[in-house]
Length: 247
Length: 245
Image 1 (cartoon, rainbow over the protein chains, first blue to last red):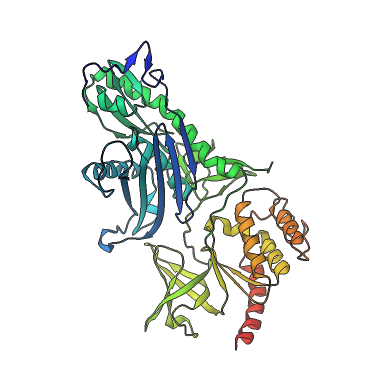
Image 2 (tube, one colour):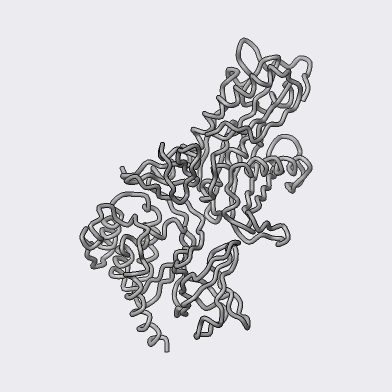
């Protein structure tokens, strides 16, 4: 993060890729893409390509992690070595991905009805195949669809979107360059029904008023994300062809 | 165009009033879905569901461990179920497939099984638990249809395990069950399946509405499948036991 001299991110009401300040990148979600997982989803959001698999509730390993009152959630976010132009080294967990896994897990703990499955674990595996800014919100969006696809009871669907500031303008859904060279990046996750904020992080600086404006913009934008999530879940049934079958 | 219902996603409003139904949640006097499901004739039917064991459910399991006190059984759940030696006169071996009834579920999801019987060699398949009521059908109409069409003996566990045995057309059963799962959310499922079985050369009779209990919608009742099919299954089981010996 940090402004680079000579880089213009916002000009004549348009951003680098020609979007207006409140436009989202192209978003497409598909549910039920993996055969062996209990639930799965694939998201293409701008240049992001993320696949999510959900397993469980199943036996909690190691056993001393289990909770006799509720299921525990395990979220594993990893970025593939070929995910972006930067070098990501090996694809195992690193400092950044451990942090993202933690915040995503805490977001889902607000909506998943874990008390229905005592002493079990629900695993959410998130693989970022290609990254172009905003992978944590895209991962969260896809993981919400995958959890619903797995039949895991949830209070609500979480939709997430990043908002921020580039060249002094508040924008929605930041891309890679806007994220790296903009002034601020605020990923926000919101539950659809109650508009509860379950994830809010901030990189860079914003005034109190700007942050409030950003949050409102995120709530408006998350509605579009929710529509795509709901469409993805409904679509596989409305086409009339569906069935996960294990023999 | 396949006739489908209104699909509801988790957190979506189902009814403006308070309705206590499984897989829903009441918030401020309104009822919301907690799983992906559909609305049919003012009933919320889940399409994706994690199986939760209930007392009285018929289940199929695989014996995973033999101990002095009893047997551990894989029931397609997070934790193995248990058959107490005290409550069974039959002895099992590891990897036996059993058909039993859930006797007790404790507060952390531990399951005790009773009335366990060993099933002879057959095909064991796994289906999503949310599709099991459709495979059984109203008053087991669907199950009887597949049985008649294929000549196989079929046992369905509420936990999503299905055992298929006997000298019948096994590939046809597998294809039919796959079709039921794919079309589980469509209307007129029994007729669709009957037509499919007929197109595959099986001689089946579609049960009339009266035989299905005067219900217009077919195969969508969670149904008391313990009553009707059990007698029939037990008959067939006797046959099979003799066959095996």
